[in-house]
Image (cartoon, helix red, strand yellow):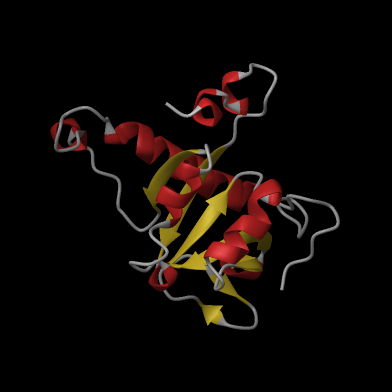
Amino acid sequence: MSHLRAISPYRDPAATKYKFTLASSELQFETVADGLLDRSIMIVGNVYHFKELLKARFPQIKYLDLVFNNGDTIKAAWVLPESAQTKDTGTLAEYLTSLGVEVSEIDLDEEDDDDDDSDLDDDDLIDAEAEEETAREIKALISTRGGRDACREHPGEQPR
């Protein structure tokens, strides 16, 4: 056993434990310059400390001003086209998990399902209602907080 593996900063209660939500959509992410984006993944969470690692692994990732609510709300966020996840790079979720980040994934394009029996995954372990609740929280965040800097992760960071 490697001694380096056994010593993890995430085992120290004083260490920051990062948690990101990866929200994917083909219908909800657009910019003023590019219009509606191809199916992409938006990272919800404080990505600042990971941004250089992400840019090195996924060169297509961008910090963009996203337009929501017919242009009434603009949010800056890290966005990766799903097509940028290849066999060589792996998935964004896998990579973040390898860095010690707790990751949850949601699809913002899925419709809510009122049938609780269909809310369980194949192993009957994960209740999809929790995932739907996270999706509703993200949608609420997008619709209720206005202004360009409402989602800014680091004051000096500028979207492209």
